[in-house]
Length: 195
Image (cartoon, rainbow, N blue to C red; front, side, top):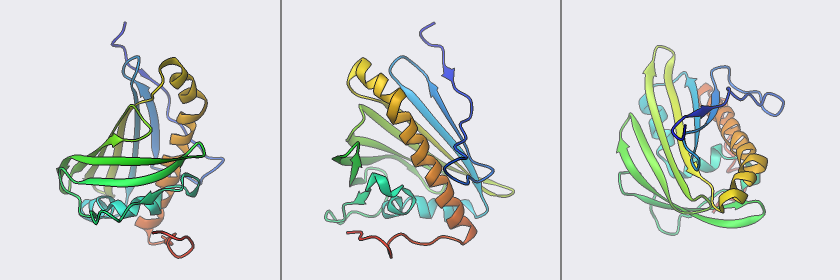
């Protein structure tokens, strides 16, 4: 019926990235208008250290693909994360430069935090980050609940482009996170200008 949840199989984009073996990504459609992107990955470092890396908004640049031209706006001076903190970014989405303004809606160190879009390309964007200690280190999970704008046209655009872009973004992110956790992380700041 209308409340049935449709879950797609785990997606592996092995032809583009050498994905970490523990990385999984899934898409679901909890209702007619909402999508749910879920990822999980185990990294061999303590949850506190993982949380410290992810709570720093400037680190998003390091784990975001270059084609998105992600930039953290440091003009506001805000870089500390806490419940209620707000951040500004710019991205290039389908060749259009877009301002993205987010707010930390929930913050429980070192377990989780949730950022929500206040202004940006989506009709809804709510990203829950969780960090769970496991015997191998930390199980990192992302749960992104989102809606695309423009009704039926937006749904078609999602199927043709947005879903693939999100798969690419989160797969790239998994590779960069594994490099960081394994000590093989090379900062992009040395090869790119980053205001």
